[in-house]
Length: 76
Image 1 (cartoon, rainbow, N blue to C red):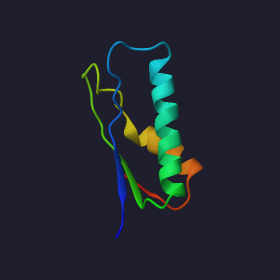
Image 2 (cartoon, rainbow, N blue to C red):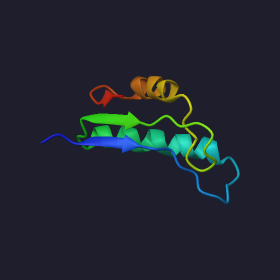
Image 3 (cartoon, rainbow, N blue to C red):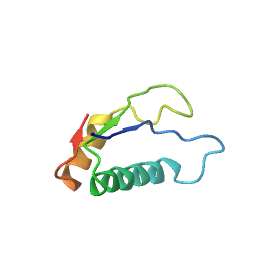
């Protein structure tokens, strides 16, 4: 059986200081950890103009940075 990780970057209000920076750092750490425990793939959604869930407007940039930090997990 294969397992995948589906990520939707959410940041509910009230927003914390440096919230988006922390959100991306935490998401990166989660994805790297997912690979280390055997997940086969990682997916990230793309959203625009939603105040609390629209914090992933260019997932391909995040996935490119993630590709530098991982070696076996498939990205999408």
